[in-house]
Length: 133
Image 1 (cartoon, rainbow, N blue to C red):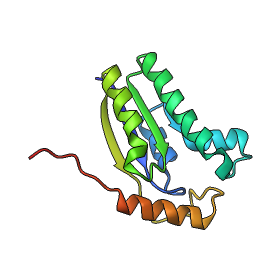
Image 2 (image 1 turned 135 degrees about the vertical axis):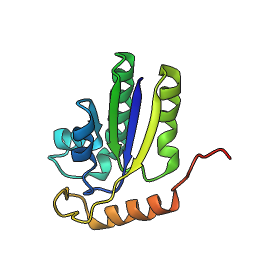
Image 3 (image 1 turned 180 degrees about the vertical axis):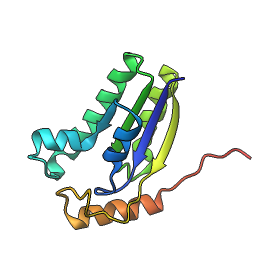
């Protein structure tokens, strides 16, 4: 069974740390910031970090990796459309999870509080359940 786990949540909730406990194939937007943004959030790099996630997950799917985890804020449901589509195209089941962590200072990244607050607000306004009754 091929699975894509999408781990959503604001910066500092431990998404990547959690992801590393369930798979060796973890793609994190923060990997891009660590490499090109001096391990700091940079609004100018956001679109590149998002593209890095999309391309990296697609590459892993093309290699038929069984279990992939992608972590990002995914603040809006529309951020997920690409991942659902490529999962369907490559025969992956998708599980989407929201991360929360009471000790956000433990995993705090160098991201401005206003950016984190915006992520939280967007996530609260974009929670969708895909149940068929």
